[in-house]
Length: 335
Image (tube, rainbow, N blue to C red; front, side, top):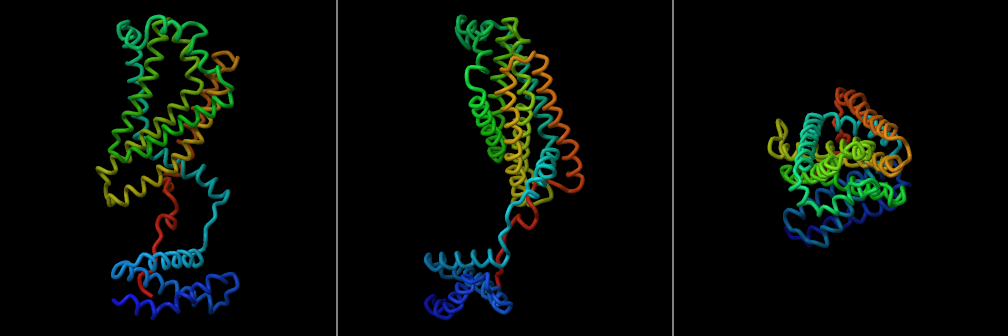
């Protein structure tokens, strides 16, 4: 194909399309029909140039022209409060509910690992000696020590924001890195359980396990549940790469990946709640039973939300994926 001849033959159509796009709010019915036809032709021209005689400048111009025309023809969809409510009441809980066969076992196994590590560390002084010197361990575990003051050394608002940022980042990493066959997710999980196990082991060896649990449980129940959901979803995403089921691997990864992105947003909101509890409730002067009761109430509220709203949405076909019309964009290949 002679590119110069091709451009000379169709430049008038592209120029006319630009004119119509410039006055799209004042188009007559006939001009609107003309715009659609010219858009289809420009899309076809772009496809031909890309496949036969790619030219960077011309391809760039036509790509921008076709994109503008597509936005005019199909319309630009704006997010609304209805979208937000649909996500919170259907999409997010449905995605979490569908992934329950992954994150529930993940939660149970991870908790068992943390408990086992805590028992091992707490009953083996030699292991404790590898963590820190005896004087440092006493500083950590004594009344008013670092395990307790950790939650009250900083202003509650700043501490809550820091905790939320760190936890949201860990959850997002679990969701995103799951595509690498889940191996990075397992490492992130192990690091979290090791930190928890060290705290359990050291405080139990000092006879202060009840104090440690009183500090961790108010926020830790919801926080760890969010991490387990993210990790289980990441592992599921990695398994999808191995076994996509009846779908093509590309379609399966696209569907599960879009749902995972939505879950990252939802889990950030969940972790915001746990961060607020950690920043304001955990270091508060409330009795231990009251702080733990708040943590249990938040955990039960989240599980009820997932299993009631999410279960209902999943039974109605909800997957957490975006609407079908928004999953992909296509351009006509023939005028």
